[in-house]
Picture (tube, rainbow, N blue to C red):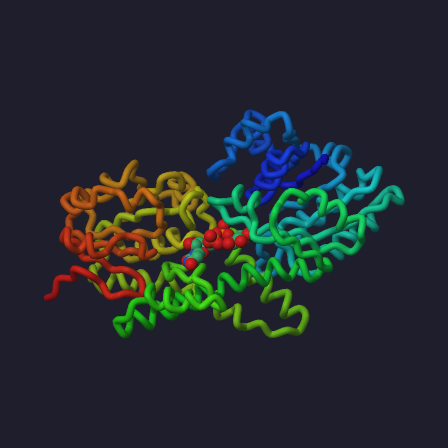
Length: 435
Ligand code: UDX
């Protein structure tokens, strides 16, 4: 099929690469000339495992352009994957979606199937349809369907190619048939439903996952207070299939481009419809409190932070991505800096992106120079390589061997036996020296 993609961010580029790898011809467009130029040169503009490989292998199936008219002319199925950032009141800014709808309306000569892929509030398909009806130049038939994307950064392509489910919200048989054809060889359950239900499935899924994380983070606080172990609690809960073990990892809170924005937008759309979903306000509040709580813990151990050097391990909002949007690391670093601490940071790929947000941030080229002279290390992102560091060497390089593990990622017992004081989340510390 000929597929058009508006927007080459994480969702758009993954959609483009994913369908190209399935043998479809893809026309992708974005306003951002730098990104398009990079893609034309065969370079993925951000770090995402597997993306570069598909881009190289499927070059002949992919066109990148800044000309939206080309996409509308060439592609029968057009995916809208543009950004839907938060407005100050928390609702989603849908102006880019409207802009795409207008482009399509103005250029459309034949039937087009328009697919919402970006995370949008319920009713957005209605507005896309209305916009096209208002601006189209010819009486051309079209359909708007909702086909939310559930990809996670860091595993985006495998999530796209091997999803747990495909959700298709469509109002006509023609639209359902085309979407069914497109996903023909994906061997997973396909849920066909109406457009509004599909839109809600996406927001409800992300909001529920965020709720799970805030829930376990509160359990972690309680475990810390009474000396219990949140990881064992999560395991004990998660074995119940009604609960499930995923997304019960306590830590320094959730970040990224989706959860923080989606819980706000879902709350707002509920409010606009006179539904009080204040549960989500609590989920947000708990998450916003995490960095300050982590700081408090550091202060309880380090005492005065002024003049102390803290090394930050990991800056991206999660491993395997260079994305620092809403990253807990940045909030924690700012709080530590306000207390007068000297901050050094290391991340395998996200350093430069973090420096754009905090220009004064001192980056270390590798973890050992980060450790040299540090009073403590704080692990904020669980990059796999941190597990295999030479911790004995790190201990010898540090001024005082103290580790705050914001993700319960390291082997605490081993570190304690090496002489570290080890502070996990929601579990008793190990190796603590008293008095
Ligand atoms: C999320 C959804 O998982 C995905 O389905 C949706 O399409 C987009 O939003 P993403 O933001 O890429 O994906 O990352 P995810 O792996 O979900 O992690 C989000 C945040 O939650 C990260 O900061 C992560 O560290 C945190 N998290 C996740 C926890 O703190 N604990 C957990 O148990 C799981």
